[in-house]
Length: 403
Image 1: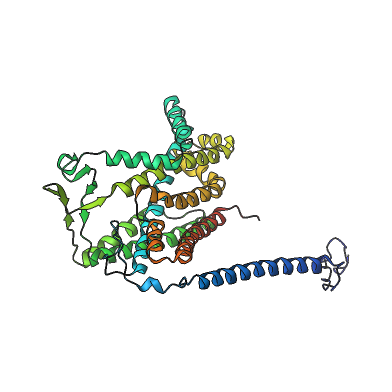
Image 2 (image 1 turned 60 degrees about the horizontal axis):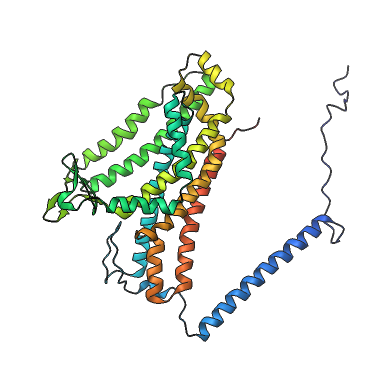
């Protein structure tokens, strides 16, 4: 047989040449383009009209517009401070920055704690232990059915009902519970701690790269070194070495009771404690159901195969089931994270000074209503988009890749 014998089944397929779009209403591509352009023009016209009408009404009422007020001196007292701030000396911009940081403090801590608590409760609902399964089921059903605002008010009233500092509840010798908040020992921060934190961040990146290299080597050769010894050395050893190089400072500021109040240490205020605790408990109930449904979505054969290989239940859950369940868990989990971030705006109900509270006060002092509302919307939009982008990236990273 000749090597040049042609077989129609082996002949390379030729793609049909793309047809040029015709400027005719009968061409669906042209028709779709016209409709899209028309809708876009209508949206632009509506926005143009609203902006022009708003500007005209503001000028007619002699209402100042713009963001020049941000450089004016602020007279807002702020109790929750993440950066240095002085009422009567700092600007409105610095006050808003303080509000953004306070909002992020609630959102980040809330996401981490609610994920941990929700995962534990979700796994507990599937426990073969009847008592544990029923307790977690009651927790989920009760917490989900109570409005989040009522839960925030409940925890705030409860924390405000603690005794005065003079009769505070002591946990050990360094933690005090009172109606002024929770006083805890606080590390005196120095430059060495900052560099140690930078080293820890570098260690995380190096650990990730080492893990990728180990997985690549395992795929190629079938054998590879363990990840955890190097990860442990990087995550603990590197920050400790950097900390030691800069003198290894370790000064703890202990809280002490003087008269009718405390001095020293750090404070978890009742407002921040109630807001974070309420959001974590409320959100964890929904996350628990997401985790439970994700685990149940994994085929029962995966459990049986793991047991046949000699893995106990904990190893099966950690190594086999949860990695597969993440593909089901991540999309609805993203919605819960967004809800938690947006629910933090309820802080105004219990007096926590987040971006909504501070921007509302600035709005009342300056009369810049549109600018104030725009700042609040921009902050929450940025936080929500950041969460969505990260979770979408992670979801794509763990997704099954077709071959």
